[in-house]
Image 1 (tube, one colour):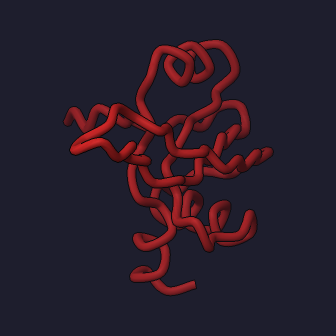
Image 2 (cartoon, rainbow, N blue to C red):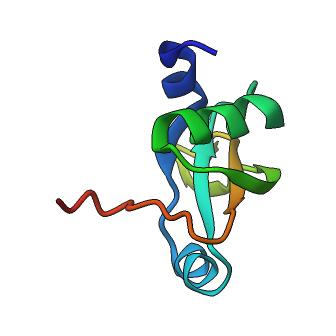
Length: 99
């Protein structure tokens, strides 16, 4: 996989309370990924960009919320895809970018 596709697959880290607890407890990180990305592409992108080894991977589709009405019509946020990546012991990703 080329570098350009790697950066198209991994869109951003997903930072939340749940993902912070998962990273501390079980060496697991959450990423927002492209909706057309496969598990193999996601694993290859994480390994290629961060130089770590992926132990397991779970992918889920997040449905967009329907929010308040504007001009009488409800608005829907877009659907998106999230990946939980568990790394082998000893590997870590610095999402803060310190250094």
